[in-house]
Image 1 (cartoon, one colour):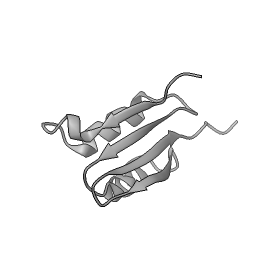
Image 2 (tube, rainbow, N blue to C red):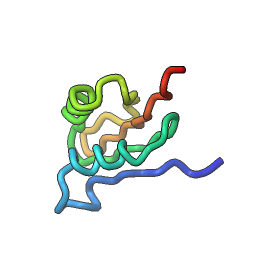
Image 3 (tube, rainbow, N blue to C red):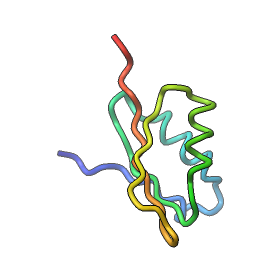
Image 4 (tube, rainbow, N blue to C red):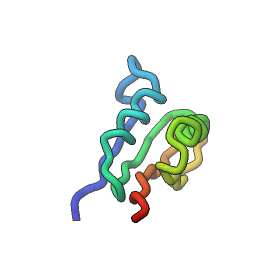
Length: 80
């Protein structure tokens, strides 16, 4: 099984978390996922994705701070 992609926002301070996350979601095919890593609560990104891409993603919190937050973001399969 291939290793899951990690998008670590701490490695790209010059790019906004929203832009990194949106780009990563757009690059996914249906059923794929990645782990988002941040040094702050990324919950607003969850709301942003829900507003900009309704019904497209699933969000699974993995670590909830206070120093490190991680969440698995999946692209939902397209209904048949």
